[in-house]
Image 1 (tube, rainbow, N blue to C red):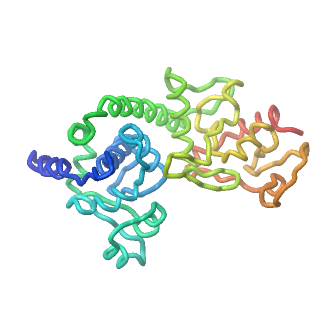
Image 2: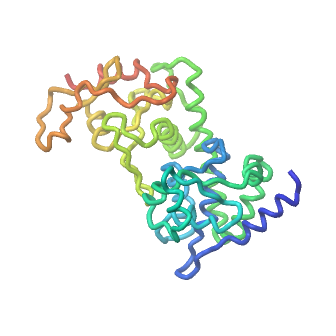
Image 3: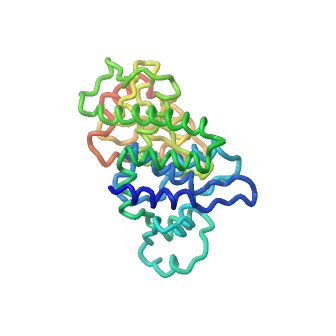
Length: 317
């Protein structure tokens, strides 16, 4: 890649539009940093930047380091089209709407109209190269976020460890699953392990409860779903992705307290040792024999041995 091509895009990046009318609001720089991180982590592998929960989560992590203003990912995702290097692919039927609409008012509207954003191919190639990606990343930080660079670089370092831990978890499926030999990819502080395990589980299950299949992620970073260990950590449960599932808070509580479990054919079983009152659709008993949501990749399926342990040691019967 010619040096002048890199310089061309560095010039463009140094001249992003920043809203300073009501205090610091570096939406576009933060969006670019978020995309760069996802490319580096292997979560973006083609020149299609889809506005999905994982991008929102990373955007918010950076955003909270630099401002207290409300994060609005839809703003930079839409308005960065004013730069020559950023483009939109509309969803089918919204081609005309995208060409005339002056602004996007919500993340829901963004996802309804735009399928994905994409870079000039030349810029995307620069972002897939570690050396030029680092130059672009440093340029963004030094140009727009120099007052917060210590916090930003600390976050980048922390996220690299979390990503490495998460990837090790996902790659461990090449080995046989074992309850007796807990798997921990490498020594790391508890927060890194917790975040790395959650990252892997959310990537596999796309922030969706495996039991009720609800998916909610707010733009202030809250998710209804949680990464649950099937065999708990305190009982030799490990961070193998096959020892984890994604559960909403209600069904996580029911699972941990033995009111719900999963049988050998991945169907929900419900304990008889409880009394339920309330709307029918919220009752655990309506879930009996419902198949759970399974990962696209069969290698990531929950281990039958883990569910067998849960049925024997946690499930109330």
